[in-house]
Image (cartoon, rainbow, N blue to C red; front, top):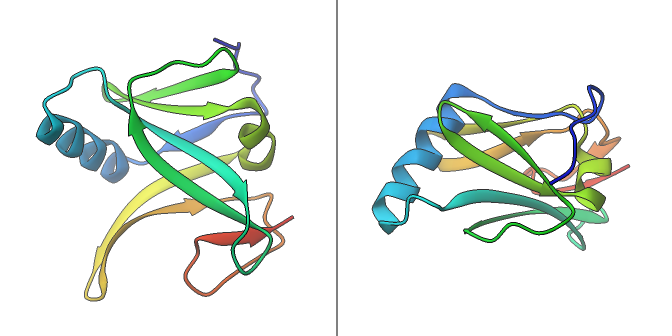
Amino acid sequence: MNEISPVKQVSLTEAAARRIAVLAAAEGNPQLMLRLSVIGGGCSGFQYGFSFDDTRHEDDTEFQRDGVKLRVDATSLDLLAGGEIDFVEDLVGASFQVRNPNATSSCGCGTSFSV
């Protein structure tokens, strides 16, 4: 696992950590963590990918809050450095949202961005 540079941090809000804990508990696997990745595509060039898994890859950096883990691969971390993951519930639904200071623009739904 990589050392965390002070510049390459990704944080979880309290709401995101709570939601990850609930979802992992529902799966019955205490080793599950949220993986955040950036892939090419979407209407703005890149899009965020969220998944649960229990596999650690050599280039992963791990972030924790309140006992929950978030893992980000090295390539994605370059595009997410300084970002924050939140979980938002409102009248139109509930979702994880990424506040990415590296994004120069994003689509209306917030799942795709450009740098």
